[in-house]
Amino acid sequence: MQDVRKVYGSGGTEVVALDHATITVGDDEMVALVGPSGSGKTTLLSIAGGLLSPTEGEVHVGPHQITEYDRKELTRFRREFVGFVFQGANLVPFLTAKENLLIAADLAGRKGKTADKRAETLLDELGLAQRMGNTPSALSGGEKQRVAIGRALMNEPELVLFDEPTSALDTKLGEQVMDLIRKEVKGRGTAAIVVTHDSRMTHFADRTVEITDGRLVA
Amino acid sequence: MKLAWKELIRRPSRFLTAGGALTLIVILLLLLGGLLDGLYLSATAAIRAQSANVIVYSADSRDSLIRSKIDSETRARIEAVDGVESVAGFGVVLLGAQVPGQSELADVALFGYEAANAKVPAPLPTGRVYADRTLEDEGVKLGDTLLLGPAGTPVTVEGWVEDTSFLFQGGLWGNADTWRGVLEANRPDQVLAPGTFQALLVTPHLGVSDQEIADAIDAAVPGVNALTKQEAILALPGVSQQSSTFASIIGVTFVVAGLVIALFFALVTLERVGLFGVLKAIGASSRTLAAGLAVQALLIAAGAFALGGALTFALARAIPPEVPVQLLPKRAVFTAVGIVATALIGSAISFRRIVRIDPASAVGGS
Image (cartoon, rainbow over all chains, first blue to last red; front, side, top):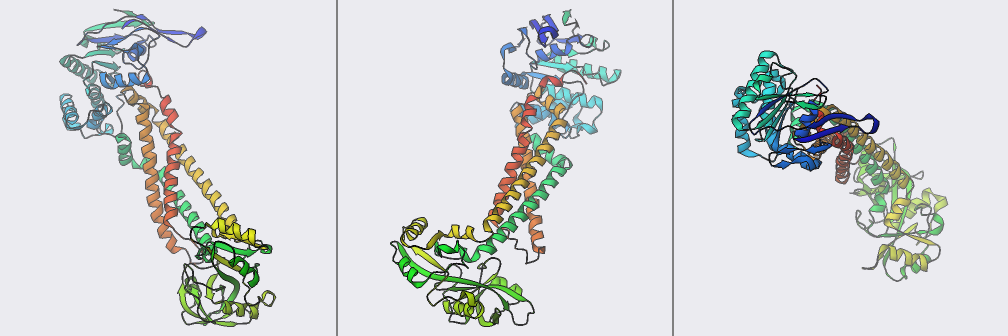
C-alpha cells in the first residue's frame, strides 16, 4: 500500500481518515494493526480488502493493482483473493457450519467434491469436525469465530483481513483463536492484517503497526 | 440462489405471513374470476351457442333481441346480399314455467329456431322442445310437460342440451311454430306474423369474413343492423358492464397482492441489511442477492397459487348452484401468471435497496 490517502466528505466538512499511509505486508507475514477508535484502522482494512477505494495512492495485492478497479472488479477481487473475518463472526444463521464455508466457494464458482472436501479439511483443522452440521445458534462464540476463519480461508486467498476477531471472546478463547489464526496463516503463506485494540493479542503477530489520526507508526 | 432456496426450506415460518396473505388473495381472485366467468357464460350461452357468426337485428331495436322484428320481405333482401350462404330465423320469449310436481315457477327462455347450432340439434316437431340441463335444478325431468306463461301453453321436454341459457334463464328450444304459438297465447302485444322473426342468423360464404358480411348487409338492406357474434354478446343487457366491473375489482386485487409482496420484501431486506453487507463483502454481487429475493418471491407466489387453487376448488363444491361460479382452466392460468408476475414486480421494489447496501458496512462498528 503506497502513499494512500482517504478523505470522507468534501469542502468544509472534509475528514481525513487515512493520511499518506504506506505499508507492505509480506507473503506469509502477520501484521497487527492497533490504534484507538476513529484512528483509521477500519478504513485501512477496508481499502486493503477492496471494500473502499482510496482517494489517492496505490494498493497492490499480490499481482493485482486494485486502485483503478470498478465496483464489479472489486467484487470479483474480494470473492477470489481476499478472506474476511468480521467482528461478530457474521455467519449465515440458517446454514450449517460446513454450508457457511461452502457459500464462499459457491460465490467464486467453485463447486462439487473438491470444495466439499476442502470445507471438511478446514473445519477439521479448526477443531470443528464434530460441529460441521450445526447451525450458528448451536455454536459457542469461539466456535462461530473459528467457522468464520474457515470461511475466510476457503478460497485460498492471498490476503486475509481480521476485524477485531477476538473482541467478543474472553482472554483464553481469544488467545486460542489468535494462535489458530497464526497457524493457519503461516502454514499457507498467506498475508494477514489483524485489527485489534487488545494489546494482549499483538504478540501473536510478526510485527505491530500503530495508527493514530490516520498516520501509521511502525 | 441456493441461499434463497435454503432459507425458504429451513425458515418457512418467516414466509408464512406473506404466503398466507397471498394464498387468501389467490382464493379471492379465483372466486371473483369464477363468478365473472359464470355470470358471463350464463348470460350469453344462447348467443355463443350459435354456429352462425353474424346476427341481424332491426335497426329500431337498438340491438336487443327481444325488441327486434324482421319480416320475410327484409329476410329475402338479406338472403340476396352477395356473400350470404344461409339465413335462419331466431326468436326468444322469457316466461315462467310450471314444472310438474313443483310449486315454484321456473324461469325459462323459449327459443324458436330453424337450424341446428353448435349446441342444439335441428328443431323437434311443434309442441316438443329440448331443455337446458340447468333446468334439472328446477325439477324438470325428461318427458315432463311444462306449462308456459299465464296461458299455460304446454310443451314437452324431449331431450337435454347444455350451456344454452339466456340472461340466466334456462333455455327451451322449439321450432318456429312452437315459439310463435307461445308468443301468441302469452304476449298478445308481441304477436309476430308467420315468417317474421326477431333476429336472423347469417352464415357467410367460405372466405368472407364476419365483419365484411355484416358491413355488406348494413349497406344493402335499410332498417337492419348486422352484428358479429362478439358484438351481439356485448350488446346483451348488463354483460359489458358486468365484465368491466369485475375486471376492475380483479385489477385492484392484483395491486393489493403486489403491495403485500412489496411491503414484505422491503421489511425482509431491511432485516437483512447486515447479512447482505457481509455477503457483499465476501464477494456476492447485488445481482446474486436480488436474484435470490426474486426466486423467493416467485416460489412464495407459486406455493400460494397451488394452495389457494386447491382450497378454491374445495370451496367451490360448497357453493350453492344458484351462484353461477365457473372455474375455468383459462382463468386459473391467467391468475397464476398474474400472481407470479405481481410478486416479481413487488419484490423488485427492494432491488434498489440491495444495490445501495455498502459492503464496507460489514467492517467496523459492532
